[in-house]
Image (cartoon, rainbow, N blue to C red; front, side, top):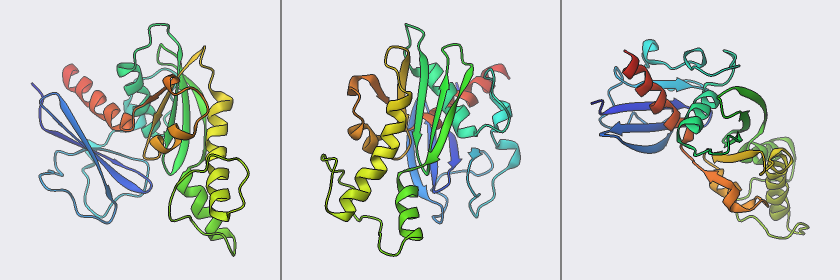
Length: 231
């Protein structure tokens, strides 16, 4: 039996961790400048990266790369986080009607990936994520600031500047999802740090959305266990 394996995904903004033990998975997240969590053996740590590496040493032979993942029509330059989310979705999402899987990963970047029920990548889109858009407004204007609270307004037309910023950014993210998602043909899966915030704002019926915030980390575990079984 395989037990006590630790996983790390180096993101653009944070470090994402998973511990797999006795067929149970636990997930947590830390800032990049934080120390390595207790009981993590870096020599045994399985990891992947889409962002700048942290200031502790990661063993190259323990890295998962896109080329290691078995999916049809998957180019090596495809983000490893997107590839891992795909294998997790194929494994854990019930899909009796063989619909396409539409994965929206709400992080620093909103990555949208579509694949069919046979595991063949169809393609996707990339755009700035929620916080990335807010920070960009502050950095590139004189008077706009990142709101201190993320209470998304219900109304569409706002007088208050912070509310107008929040509504505009949310609409840019949900708008692209609404334009791509067809409930008759697709299963929509949300993951990533901002997924719950966006779920509340999407106009489609909530029963059409599967919220799996740790989908990428689940993909790391699934991939590693499949390699262990083949060894």
